[in-house]
Image (cartoon, rainbow, N blue to C red; front, top):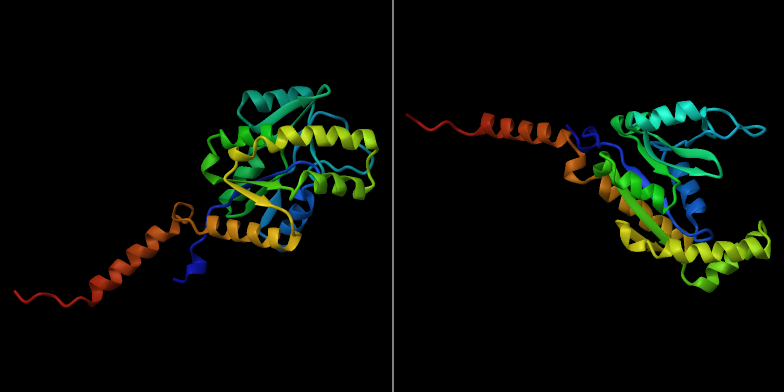
Length: 222
């Protein structure tokens, strides 16, 4: 048996950052370069928008369906925002990690906290991305050209609260260089996949080694 034959259980990867710190760019790179990783599609009670497909952009649920999932423990995390529920369904995540696939979550710190407190927490790896400076964070938001000055100011105020949660995460990376930050993130995930507790096949592998030892050890004369 080779080391490649010992399949790891999948990771639940929580990647969080204030807006503009680079989470979206890093997420795209991870998904593009890791075929075994899937994105956790959220569920919502809001109506589909033009071009949105059920199961691809969101799992669209009625309010009753969503609340039934909550009551039955079927949501890993959820919140109600402006009268609509949003959250991460449990079943697709359990299926993926059971197959050894990693699942990437795009959630804020509240959602991440709920996932880390769930009974699947042993599969969780949480990473927080910091900007190199507050000035650079604002420069990136302005350079995107997507928001008004008022919206950018609101995002900057929100970032202060988000950054204050950095110590709740397993790992913290400073995104002063996107390529280097991606390399560090990749190294973290590879090390986490190789942790002994995430490789149940190691027990059988070591037993096979013990059997080989037993077969080759000369028997003591009687």
